[in-house]
Length: 55
Image (cartoon, one colour):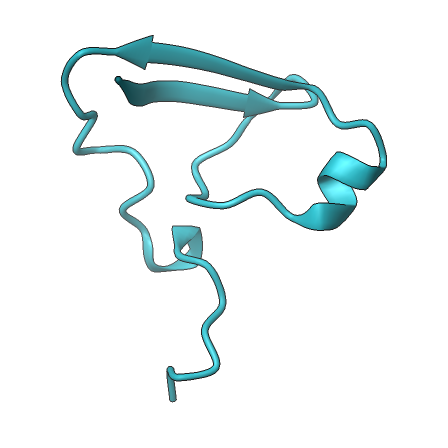
């Protein structure tokens, strides 16, 4: 299954990760799942998680 749409605390969420602080503070996560990947979700550069290997 693939994520088609995701909301965190009622707000549209396109990032490909969830922060620990979001979970720690009792965040609400709503997923819409499907059998095919949504290739338009999470594709912006800011949707990728931080990496120490990036320059």
